[in-house]
Image 1 (cartoon, helix red, strand yellow):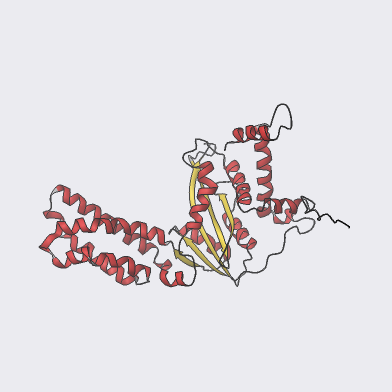
Image 2: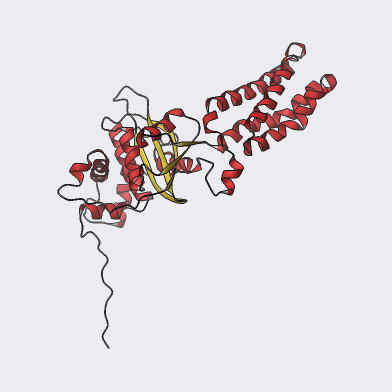
Length: 336
């Protein structure tokens, strides 16, 4: 909720003074905590002075990074209409881990430093095996490569492949009725074999799937000039979907996987972690349905606080600053 509404709720629940809680005070304290969390990443030497404050983390063998990007409305102070937010989540040894997020346009934000800090918090070492699940945006996968200083194992999100294949499967019967008996081979491809493309992709038979899609794309070309306007428009849209899928797969062929095999091994094959992170971190508070506009600093620092809250580690982080903060009290001893 907005700061003003949150202040009103706190004023009802915690009437600490007659005038209630000021939304400006609430915002200032929230961003001050965000600034402290930001310093933990950007200025580790100052944060850990005069002695280390962080709990040691054991080395991890396998890490999976689900990463995604979105946009929030900007306040216009930097001449931009939107700010780019990068967020995601890290899975360690098959167990869900912490969230991470930052605003790329924030002056003090170095994306590689933030990415490396998120990996270090989960026990990353040079010997760790890192998988990157993304929707095909090269910049996000390359960001993880730069942070680890080595090539990671890329995984193209299965959901985005399926999403591009679905309209082709839905339109195929209609296109087959247009072709009719003029080309029995093409009709069979459209009615029967196109539905096997999903199976081929799922099982890592990428070349066979691409060959079958290519045969359908080439076969439909000769019908364009002889169709009426409505059928020609439908054929053009069908071919456009196939062309988009082909280009998408060609751009991301280094991230092809045998998804059936990975699934049997218990490995993640989707960037749903990143999608859900965006939903909880950004869209519910800063998304398109909200009319608020954000400064780069305000959005960036609030995201640091929201990540800590979602991970249930804000109290632990407070204890790094104040060692006696909410220490567990010993249970009462009753002597009989």
